[in-house]
Image (cartoon, rainbow, N blue to C red; front, top):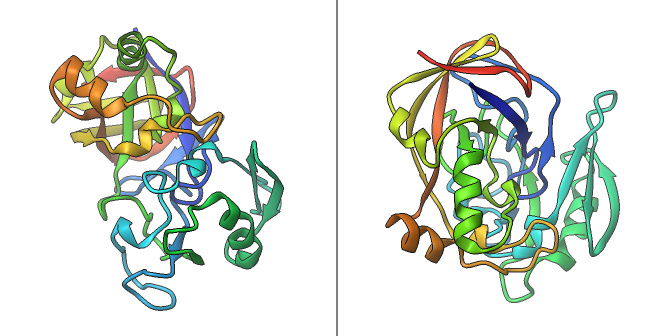
Length: 249
């Protein structure tokens, strides 16, 4: 039996992973508060606050700044503030939009000096600042992660891949065979749409922020491509939680 092993969101694009106990999915929407904010850099191709989705090269990303991959996040339900931690920085608790300068100041020492610098926090109501404008939820298999870890010769953290839903009980890469199928998880249903092609952000260790595994090469050498995980669209609203059974419809 396959089941939901873990549930993760990333309140600020590329900055902080946050495990969840449960979440309510909404038809046609991304995971709630996943990539709710993003940090634009000084070379962003738009000014001020955008009114629509913007391309990923406008924002701070782990592919450019490996240290970002070691940031963890924790949202305070009572206040909506987010606490950020990193092994090389003091803990910071802020409202990412209202106190954005504090977040910018905290991020700057973790960002490469030779790159366009952190400039401002942005948010587009109703639009997750994901790599694609579609309201995708990413789904990955722990069996695939185990197989990749075996090929790498070292345990690979799921946080390298910034996924939302991790499914336990599938064979390695079984998720690729489910494209076009619908999953029922808890009360919700999601239709799997396409594979996720990976980038060098996955080379960084989420515990240290240092690049220590050539994930791209291992993917190519092991399976002949650079894909890992799949994108899905929520087709039926409902609450999900780790431990929920995953059924292929």
